Amino acid sequence: MADFLRVTVQDRVGWIEYDRPPVNAFHWEMLREVPEALEEHLADPAVRVVVFGSALDAHFSVGADLRVLADMDDEGMRRWVDVCHDLVRLMRASPKPLLAAVHGTAVGGGLEMVLHCDVRFAAGSARLGQPEIAIGFIPPVGATQALARLLGRPRALRFLYDGALLSADEAYAIGLVDVVVADERLREEVQGYAESLARKPARALAAIRRCVTEGVDLPFDEGLAIERAEAVALGATADFREGLDAFLGRRPPIWTG
Image 1: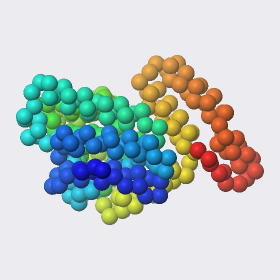
Image 2: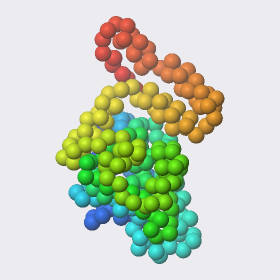
Image 3: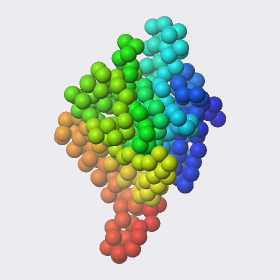
Image 4: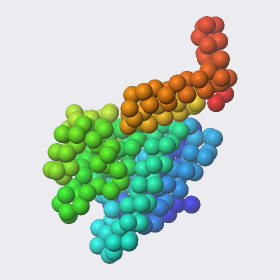
C-alpha cells in the first residue's frame, strides 16, 4: 500500500498518481514508492498500459522536496541519484506502454519521470519546466539524456540552461509533450487512448517499445539486430497467426496475449 501515491486499475489501465499534498514534493518514502508501484503494475496481467499522473488538483509535481536535498551529505546524494536512475532503467525496460497525464505545475523530478513515458498528454493550463539551474543543480532523473533524445541537443540545452516554465502549447511546439487537451478532458482522453492500446496485442506492443527505446541509442545495424530478433519471435506467436487469419478472413482478431 502506497502512502504518497494513488495506485489504481481501471479497464486494464494502471494509474500511478502522485499524492503528497500540497505540491507533490518528493521525499525518500515517496521516491521509493514509485518503482514499487510500477513493478506492481508490470507484474499484474490485468494491467496492459500504465499511466503516470497526479491526484492533486493544482499541481502535477514540484519535484524533489528541497528540504530533503538540503540535509543530504555526499553519500545521501549518491543514493538519491542511484534510486532515480534505477527507476529510469525500470521505465525504459517496461514491456508495457507508459503514458503521462500532466496538469497544473509540473517541474523537476516529477516531470522528469514522465519524460521516459511513450506518449505525454498535457492539460491546456499545464506549466512545465526543469528549473534546477536556479539552485545550481541538474535534473537527476535522466532528463539530461531523455531531453537530448526528445528535443535534440540545442533545444535540450536551452531548455535546461533557461530553467523557465513553458505553457502546454509551448511544450507541444518543441516536442516536450505530444498531445494538449482541455483541462476537464485530460483524464478521459488519456484513459481512452490507454484503453485503445490495451486492446492491441501485448507482445507486439512490447516488441515495438523495445525496438524503438533500445535501438535509438545503438548503431543502426545493432538496432536492426533487435528488430530481427523481435520479428522472428513474434512470428512464432499465436497472436501473429490470429492476426493473419483475422485479416485474411475479414474479421476482428481475438488476441490471447
